[in-house]
Length: 297
Image 1 (cartoon, helix red, strand yellow):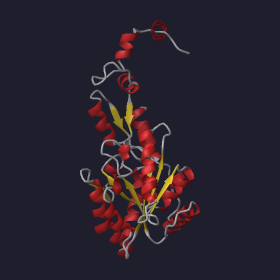
Image 2: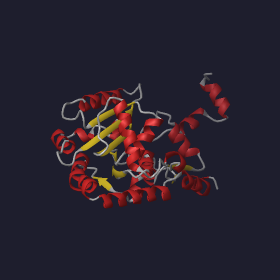
Image 3: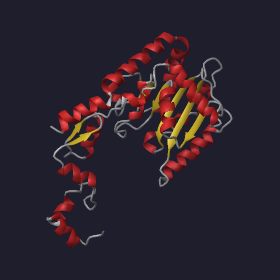
Image 4: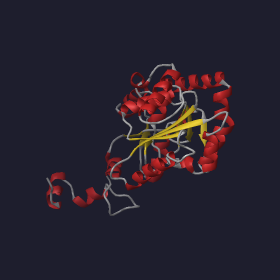
């Protein structure tokens, strides 16, 4: 049902102009934003991470968001502590889809929506360095990129086409897999089987990023820009925001790859710590307790 301005004003019991003003922002005074409206009218509102609240305050100075970082269900996402078995299941599934990966090779996973701010194409910034990384004769690396595209998002569709093209190049064909349109079953395989979980968003754009929590719960070591939940975790390897691609290559070559292949005990200890951090601080149990204490009281 569509209402005229007069009918809407009567329905609201308030002047239309005043109502409209409550949904505006100095940067767009002629547009009504439900976000602005809710921030101005809600008694309490929550952000989904500490940084989300910080950056929302920059965008909307009147914001009163209470930071309550998202969490994940341990019962749903914990696939058991035998990481190698989980990895084998992932590699076999990739094989069923036509891929050709090796269960003994360091496996990096990037999996999320294909949108520009998450920078899914970032690892392809330097082809020579990427080629050297994945095709190292002694310590090779394989990368799985999984992503869903909104059919209405033209930019996302172009990103998917680029990823398909890159993954089909001769030097990457047996080392880089693009897995489009992944579902819940595939997500469980990816988060359970990854050795390294890669996250590359522009800092300030990733509100939380729960996929890293799911992978971390299963022992995947985190490599990420310092955004969302990761900025609160104190975990693993932080990518430089100014030179993200270069810092990824450097971390992989100098620290991550050598540790995976040469220091199994050190790697296992990092996996244990990652599991402990996620299970202690990034669960839905903790999140709901904070909702009750900070938002609903």
